[in-house]
Amino acid sequence: MSSLDILPAELVLRILAYLPVQSLRSVRLTARRWNQFFITNESTIYHHAAFLHDFVDSLGIFLPEARESRYLKFLKDVPDWYTYCKRYHQLQKNWVGSGKAATTKFYGRNPYDVHRIKVDEKHGLVITTHEFGGLTVFDMDTTEVLWKLSAVSVRASRVRVDVHRCP
Image (tube, rainbow, N blue to C red):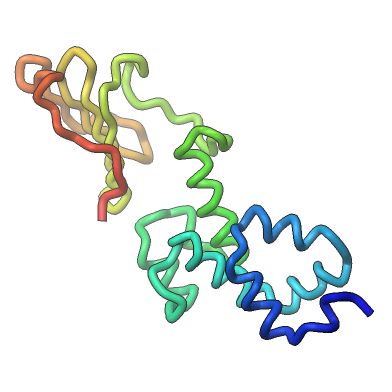
């Protein structure tokens, strides 16, 4: 008799609710029985993982609401909680530099002079300030420059644009 059969499913689900996404994948790969348990309870397991990692604000939120509550285009078509967690986790890895980029878009003429960057996903804008002054606003999808201010208008030492996701 396996250890999975000894415990009630509700207790196993409660334990799994405290595991990070990376560990869930490892547990799932340990045995066919575990994988089958994950397939059977996938929605519950990954819904809790989304909450644990702050991908959603509460456990009371349903997937359609979760997709619409964030202004992230890559979440709009997710079919299930597993895919939602997988994509959100990849986004986090990309932000810390340990993921692979899903885009090859290039904003600006020289990436080495970018001082700060702000992404407004709701309005589809990328705003950059430059090391030697100036500010540029790009269309997120086309990379087209929408408008810019020169170094005369925006000095690097006075720029106060912080990196964060816009509400």
